[in-house]
Length: 507
Image (tube, rainbow, N blue to C red):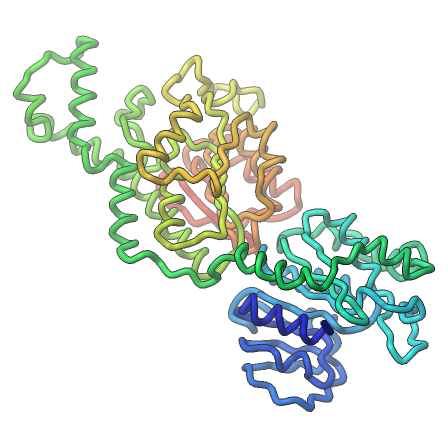
C-alpha cells in the first residue's frame, strides 16, 4: 500500500469534517478530501481537479500559522491533517504543534516520510531522487517528550506513515523551550546510522494493520455530529426540576415542619401537615426563593433540605447553557466537577450527555466524599465546614453513585468517581483535556489545588465555573492569586447569581 492509498483509507474511514494539508505541490493527495479543506504550500503546482471546497495559501507553513486563525477559516477545529512539507524534523515538529492548537482530542494528524527504505534518503540535504529527510526523528522525540500522544507508525511503501491522535490544545510544554528542541532535532544526537537501527527505534507496524486501526479510531471518535435525542429539552427541564426537588417542594416543607415539631419549636397540627403550602405560605415562598438562588433557608446549613444539588435554579440553568455553548462551539474535552455534594450537578451533566447523544466526553466526579477538610491556610481561618461540624456536607461515594442510579444515569464506562482530597487526587485525574471545569470547593486551598492540577488541561475556549466566587472571599482570593502567580489577568467573569460565576479560557 502506497501513501496515497493509505491516506485515501483514512479519508474514507474517518470521514473528517475538515482537512488541512501542509505540502501539496501537484495536489494528488489533496484530491482525496471530501470536506472543507485548507492547503498550504509556498510552491504550488496544482494539476489535479479538486472536488472539495478548498482554500489555498501560497505560504510557508510557519508564515501561515503566524498570520491566520485556522479555527476561524475552517469554522471549527482541525479534524484531519496531512503533513508532507519540509523534510526536516524541526519543521515537522512546528507543524504538528501549530496544528494541535486548533485540534480536538480525537483529531488525527498523519505525517509522511517517517520510514525511509535507504539510510541515504534520510539526509538533511537532498542527495538522492527519493528523499525523506530526517522527518523520522520527530517520532521518537514526541514519544519521549509527549507520552500523552498516541503515535502509531505503519510500514507504508517506500516512506512509511505516522498517525498521531490524543491531542491537548492547551499543552504548551514543548513551546516553552522550542529553540532547544529544534536544535536537538537538527543535530546528530537523534540520528541513526543504519535503517535497522532506525526501524527498531520507530517500531513500525505492518501496513495490513492500518485498516483495523482506522476502524478503531472511527469508533473511538464516535459520531462527530451527534443528534439530540427527541424530546431532549423537556427531559432536561424535568431533570432539573427533579434534582432541585422543585416538584415536591411541599413535601420538603412537611419534613422541615415535622423536624421542627420534634425539636419543640413547632406544635404538631395535622391540618398544617395536610395543606402545608397554604398553612405555611410564607415558609413555602421562602423555600421556593431559596431553591431558585441556591441558598439554604434562613442561611442555615442545618436546613439543607432534600434536593440533590445546592446550586439552585439559576446556576443549574447556567450550567445547562454552558454545556450547550461548548457543544455548539465544538470545544473538545471532558466534563469535571470538583466538590459534588449529593451529585446533582454531575447527574445533570450525565443527563445532558445522554440527551444530546454525546459519547466522546468523560465525566469526572471528584470529591472527598467525607465533607470538607479542616481549614489550614491562613485565608481559610474561621471557615470550618468539616464533617465534625457539618455532617450534612459529607455524602459518601456510594450514596452519590446510588443517586446517579435512581435517575438511570450511572455509566461506569464514561464516569469516574475520584475520591480523596483534591491535593492528593486531581493531579492524577483520568482526563487529558477538559471542556468544562466546575469548582465548588469553598476553601482557598481546595480552589487553588483544583486550579493548579487542572487549569492547564482546560481547552482554549473551555469554561471554568466558580461556584463560591461571590459568597466566599477565600475562594475569590484563590482565583486571583492563581492568575497573579502566572502573571496573567483573571479572565473576564460572567456573574450568574449572588455567588456563582464563570469564565471562558482565553485562546
